[in-house]
Length: 320
Image (cartoon, rainbow, N blue to C red; front, top):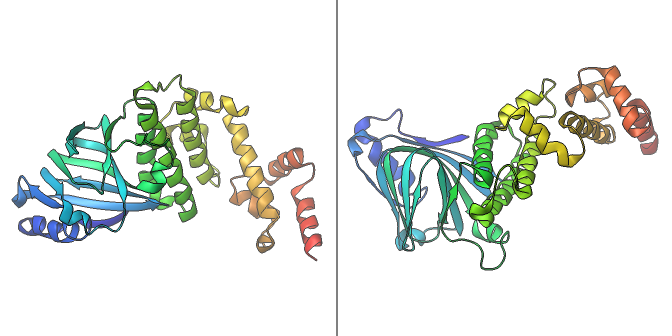
């Protein structure tokens, strides 16, 4: 994620004033009252996932307030979703108090007045989600204005882990992939909020399908890795190997078969692209994760009924 601002290299006596000037007055438009301004620490990192802005935030103990004068400066209507990794925070909005912690996230309106009361140092992932796009994922009148999200199980856990995974991998993802994943993340969050306390991770088909979609998206982004293994996939997505196999039952393919199928399809598409004619068949195979040209040719013929070289010759002939 890209660094927006940090107090790390500033004189301790100047940190809080610098934070107020750089962040509170220009970046998020809020007032901040720090408990220990002389010993202030903080940073913000940011990444864009299509319509979703994700921030990794670390702050000292403080109270944050947004009022009408701040709202008047906003140029967008959106929600905030927070998933805390450290510390505790109370979100006060519209007469409600949402008590959040590493086991409980929250969604609230960024376009309405609020107070955030932070206990001790805290670190959180924040999502800024456009209201119009997110609201369209709910039945009329069902979009919650402010609510907590249990992140210890079910869809809430999936949403929080998916968010953390995207934060960790942001710098390795292409812009187009980040855009698609942003929409996937909104889908998972909407499901988590819509289901509320009704979801059960091990039983609910909706939760299982949401998890499967996030795992597939991660695999798709790492198909070019020749060392991609089931253990690596499971570890990177926060599931056991047993659960990974369980997720793919609905595809009627094993995990390995699904990966092979996607690699073959990507190779087929690459062989059909005129701008890639300068690449040999072997180069394309290696670029998409195959480590043996003979194995690639065998499985390609088995799937498509002809060799990759024959497909390339047909493509060249059709162009000429």
